[in-house]
Image (cartoon, rainbow, N blue to C red):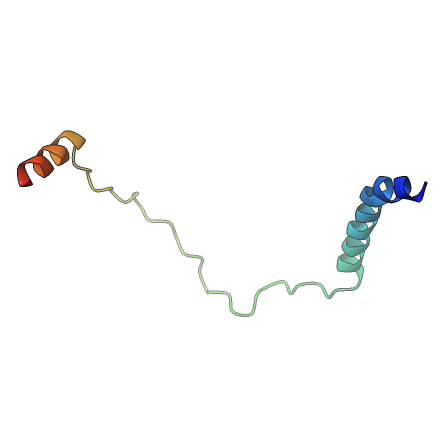
Length: 70
């Protein structure tokens, strides 16, 4: 009978552990400071225009160059 109780109760034990850790994190651990100590003065801004990707060579051209080089 105990062999059936242990697998059936495993999810509840894990749930209780997660809830206990969540409570411990909220109540026991110190609250994080409002501002990080080593925070940069300004947040980095995104570039004005997205970077242009280099145009890839066509597959036919690459294959022909390889065949000519052989």
